[in-house]
Image (cartoon, rainbow, N blue to C red; front, side, top):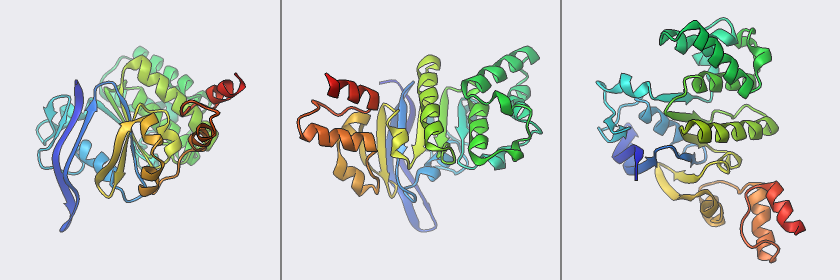
Length: 269
């Protein structure tokens, strides 16, 4: 297996309380994984450990490079991160300049910057926001701009930390489809840290966190079949999955179907 992230025997806590104790996790290159957990499960702490904001005990490797102070700059160049509160990250006067900011710092040509900014704006349907001041945007719009600022770099690894929490459900579904397609076309490794199980449906693998430990780990379909495990993690199944389980119990479906349109097609056959 070709892993792009390896966490081995991670120990980390606040004060005397260990949140992560001998924690292990491997993320395969070019995979799409959801780290799923309720508030307090340790998701944001793990994000900060992965990008070096919090110091770990030499237990994390990114693309075969040990995460430490001397390697931190090289590692961060590989990673795009979108946090839950994008407003604190904004530095530019317009959305267009905000998306272009890191590309300018990396000395991309003006032509390449213009091309990439327009591409990612079109991808996320935010072309009409490009000349607006970021701080005048709604929370959901800010999160879209923050996502655009990460995608424009075409990172090897994209980390989302409750990155779509302020976006309405319909828009969120559309953006998750965009992220899924981006993952497939750009071959980017995506790790989505979320408490929203509806988002996790789009990933290929789900790791369920509970108080700093892995409560469940497997393919998306296999994990979503484990209703009791989801309840233990403090999470409810998505409506589509819950409905599919009940239809399967009544013999109307042969297997769990995660896509509502496909489920309807199977029921009509």
